[in-house]
Each structure stands twice: as structure tokens, then as C-alpha cells.
Image 1 (cartoon, rainbow, N blue to C red):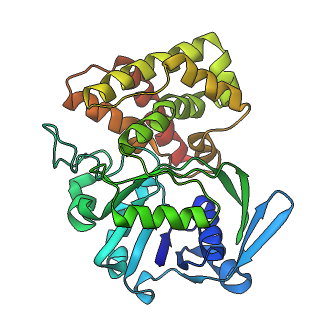
Image 2: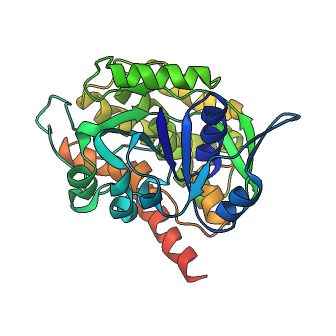
Length: 324
């Protein structure tokens, strides 16, 4: 099984090591010092006191790799459009694209079955380029739950988690998604094949839509946001709006709002990905985590007053960060 991981950062590097050790023919697309270190010394994964090292093909030029069975996209969602052209040499007639990204993926309304069937979402796929040039028919959904970090160039630290739920947009258990799930399991990962991957996408997004921007605005960790009455109330208001939108599109949540907030609070003093990006002067994933929910609210004619306010504030925070 030929697998290219496009964006071999913290999550992509973790997957790369585990899949390579399980016998997959893995290639990694990366750049900069991280790529140089992997080429020189291999890719190192630290799990507790154990160190795992693999030496897969690594490049910043996907054209060197040729068509793949699976391309796992592990980029920040807002970066995908910028690499569509570079990704083309990886795509053969039967190549599947696995969207291991945060937020709503470009293929969301493919085989969805409602009045938005076949629609692209402008906030996450400007001009519908991903839909047109990557193709929704190639897509397999993937929700990423582990926490990992790049400890040094070429070195990935696993923090917690090993779960990567997978699913076809249609809900069918195809041979492709079953084969990918089996490979993930051989790699020591949990990869259940879900009949409705969109439910799982929304369950994770449900927390991200509020905790991420609130943390970027306040610099508070999850335990503080979930404990302080003011920030907890803002988070709940945003989540209720998001739930109303999601349910309009057929989503079912297996937990209620209070339980979801409490679960995040119990994670402890964790900095959200948006806060980490802000502190490291990196672009924040505002559109795939927040703007897209606002856009889907507009499509469904559901007002989003709390989301609108927080989105306006965090967008302004991002503009200020770009100046300094």
C-alpha cells in the first residue's frame, strides 16, 4: 500500500512512523529544517520513554513520488488550496484522498443528500478549487484525536491519543476505507469505520468553534475557559448555535452541550491549536473552524449572533498579529 503523507508535521509525522513500521510504503512531503533533519537522520517518534525511528522517502517535491494509493492530507486546512497543483502528480485514477484536517472538509456536501448536494463552501474552498481539482469522489473523511508536537526538527513527541475515525462521504463501508482502516490498526492506531463520519467531524468541531477563538482572544487554557462563568457561557452560546445548524443538516450529537464543555474542561491546562499558532506567529485556522459554521448558518437561514461577534473579534486579532 503506497501512502503519501502530505504535511509531515506533528500529526503527519506520527502517522508516518506508525504506518511505516506497520509495513506501508510511506512517503512524506515536508519542508525546511524538518525535512532536512528527516533526510539526514530519519524521522524519530518519542512515545513515553520509547524512541521509534524510520527512514521513509522524504521530499518537498511530490512529483518525485508518483501516483499513490492514498494521500493523507495533514496540513492546516487553510493551506490546502495553495498545494493543489503540487499534489497532482500523486493522483492516479484510483488514488483516495484522506482529509486528516480540522474543521469541515472540502467534500462535505458530496453525497450528502440535501438541497446543498454538490455545493462547495467558499470559506474553506475558495472558488471551489479543491472540489474541482482534487475531486470529492476521491475523499475519505478522517477525524484526528491524538495530540502530538514537533519537539525538534525531525523529532515528533506523542502526547496522548491514537484514534483516527474514518468514513466514506456516502456512509458505505467500501473496500478502500476498510483496507485503510486495517492498515491503521496494524500500525497500532484506532481507526473505526463510521457510517456517518460527518457526525464525528461535528463532534470535534463543536468544541473547536468556541474554545479555539476564545482561547486566542483571552490566552486562557481549556480548564479556565470551562470553569470561568463568563467564558463558559460564551462557549455554550456558540455551541448551541452550531448545534442548531448541524442538526438542520442531519447531524446527531451523542452528548449534550454541558457534557461536551465539561469534557474539554477536564482536559486541563491545554492550549488550543489556535492559541499555539498565535503564540508562534502562525496563521490561525479561523475559516475552517469558525467562519465555515457561520457560512453554513447563512445557508440554513439560522442566525449566529454569538459566533458572529467572536468571529469578528478573533479575525481582528489575527490582523493585528500579522502586523507585529
